[in-house]
Image (cartoon, rainbow, N blue to C red; front, side, top):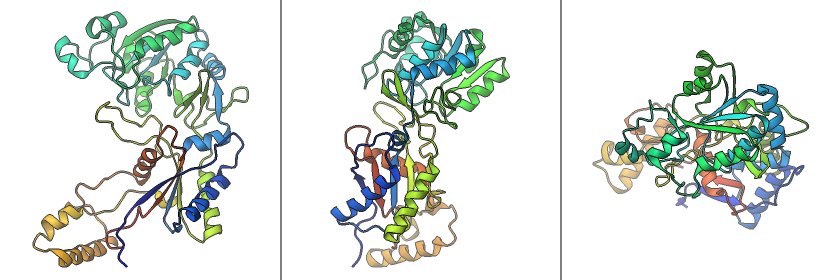
Length: 396
């Protein structure tokens, strides 16, 4: 019988994960249980995607703001520090800021504008047309910013992040000055000691600061790279990828992830005879067209995955084949011609007009985004996503 369904994505419910739980056994058991109850068959090249939060919680990879404060003190002493380019997020940065504020005497907080790195806007970009402010060259004080743009609330959270971050720093009786600039070097006019908080542009930012007189330059990826008083840590990403757990505690990005995906793959093979692919995923990489927010606040979409998920898709555009190459064919004749064409291309794929418009992104970024949209970030209770048919082509 001819197949009429391609890719199928299922969000799988699991037990509530706590520190010390065996995430490998839970993942494997959840998949096998779901296959029996929902009556689907585990196949080769199926994909098990597990949210990073599940892995980190099982690892107990948490840290308190006191741990952050101690690491900050060790790195900066009692110097005034610049905190530059943080994203505007109660979940991602506010608790980190508490730890930083608790560990220093004065902060110069430098915000990018009109938006942060992932698209949270402090002010609508159209406003600049009326003010004459150039965000690429102009440095504004807090007073100047308010004069031009007033008080703006985030469209989703209804928060004025300038006031919010300022109030957090004030809680710890830490002096605070807020400035606005998109040039990393601006901060060096205020202090040579800087915490770089941007995510995907952090390497460039740190390089520019060091090349232009910066003295103590650290990124969030350099904080809590080892345990402080028994805290969690991440040797590769530090505080990047962390989320708020409580007002005074964060869950860090998981560590030692590769053994987790490899062992899940091995266990499924032992129990079913099938070779599935496994990945751990964080934030997907997609843009909200209304809020203008890029979701990708983690340092990577996937910190670990099995080898079959390496690379990018090798696909051709069916629309192009139907409208151009085989425009004179219809019905079964068109279907047959397209099928033969795809089959002939499979063994020697090269980019050409027939692949124009397909998505030239890494498989892990695509599948991670798909998984993140499926599992959501709220109360769906489906932190494992099971994907079938993702690698199937039209001819299969």
